[in-house]
Length: 440
Image 1 (cartoon, rainbow, N blue to C red):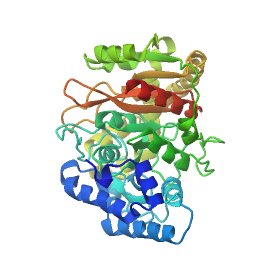
Image 2: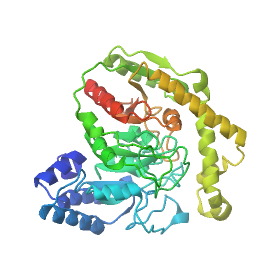
Image 3: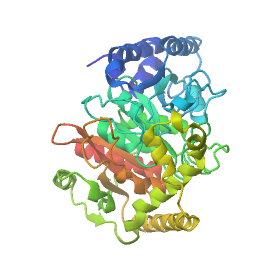
């Protein structure tokens, strides 16, 4: 495959910058791929070829006038349909919000536009970014789920419809689709990408993240998006990690890695121990560390924090519009209705202890490796899969990335998840570069 739509975002940006192709040609190639495959994959909640091409022509006019070009000039991007766009509907995967038209862009949308990106359209999300399926298929095997809740973003990048897409993660909604669909998925440190103008599920846990087909693409998009926004009250003071600089660095010092096991591995498929055991052995002398003790309660704590927040934020939809919601969505919302304040406080205090314990672990290791999902994407669209392998890192806000490095017994992708220290995303980028090079 050598069509333009199969290029990485960085290849597209370089070719446009050099005048080898136009932004319109790049966008048209993506449009043609969507037209060919959308009826099969169903990755898009909204896309308008005319609107996309209008943006592309404006990019070409900008370049023709001799103006400087930013990192993503002319590069098409898909946005999960919980991220506001002033010129497109944002419906959060719900019939209850059908036809909703935001009056302004989300901060992330505005940053992408300012960097020259073309907003190609809105990708399918499960209802309210939870687990109510909206029909997207895994492009590697359409009988299987692409994962969720960022279903369309993961599937669209994997199917060469778009080189970059944004998703979100509150439990495991970024890295699980990345693993199932075989693309790079990056969830930065909590508070690194503004959620202003994004549907809030659980403020204490919600992260925006990036799907791409190369590490350089992840770094480009991360450098564009990791800008402090005071309208998101949970943003870090200095979120920009300099990911491109970290990726291009020449630090050859030995990398200290640990292979992490613990509560999530209770949900792993039977073949995962052998698969990951052989893979870790191939990387070198990497010790295995099992997270026990206080980590035995980590998955329950994440569920308590998430469910209580979901009930607080979404209860009005059940109270006033239950007949317009999926049964699965109603089940997820009411799951937090009876959580006691004491249990919520205990879960939040355990989170602080988990973060402190992980900080101690990072005194001995530069990065941690584990699986990104329990195994291959499950057959069927009833479930988006189990989020257990991401929930601890979402709860504690650590930066994580899924690398498309392994295959399961049916030839389906399985991601290798690399976890970094909270607030040290540049170090994570250096670690994933080493892991990817070592795995080649």
